[in-house]
Length: 64
Image (cartoon, rainbow, N blue to C red; front, side, top):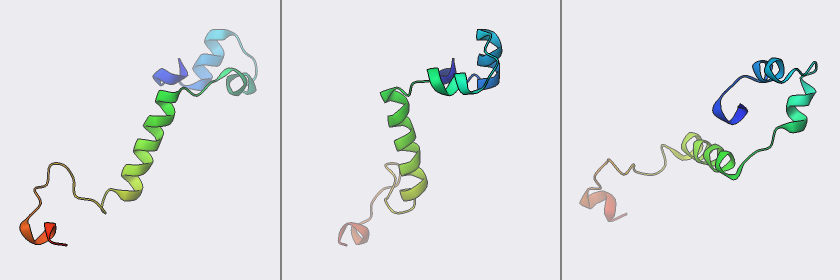
């Protein structure tokens, strides 16, 4: 449920947990979620540094 965006408090209620710590205890981070987080961080940190695939590279830019 957490991987699909369901809030931790809602998961707690559905599963009958009384403490939020249970969410942390049983929550596991999948490889797909790690890769998505890395992709998002890459976009945030390096978005302006590389030309996007939608932007054509001019001769002047390719000579650099």
